Image (cartoon, rainbow, N blue to C red; front, side, top):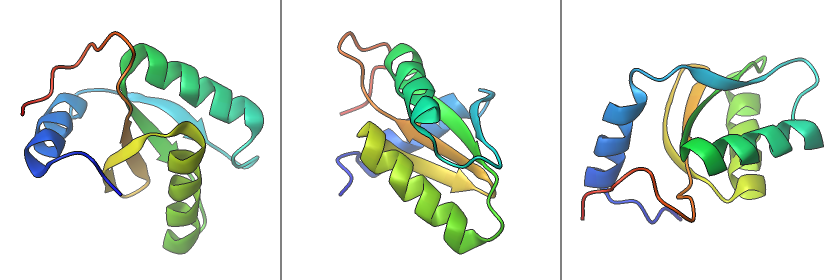
Length: 98
């Protein structure tokens, strides 16, 4: 269940618009090393774009749900193969609207 409000998601989508994809899920799928990298990226940046190369929409959605569960991140949006994830850091970089 998402704790982000619609206004906060809108703000995060605007911030993510110009960001580049940081993590790419390739043929190996979701590995422990990939989760470690994504976890580190979320700790550093809070807002991360991930390219999910899956053969179909169902597999892509399943991979995204796995990423969210294993990193405790929240889904901001998906556009095609790109998912935008958010997880606040201990020292927050991004200020969210109330």
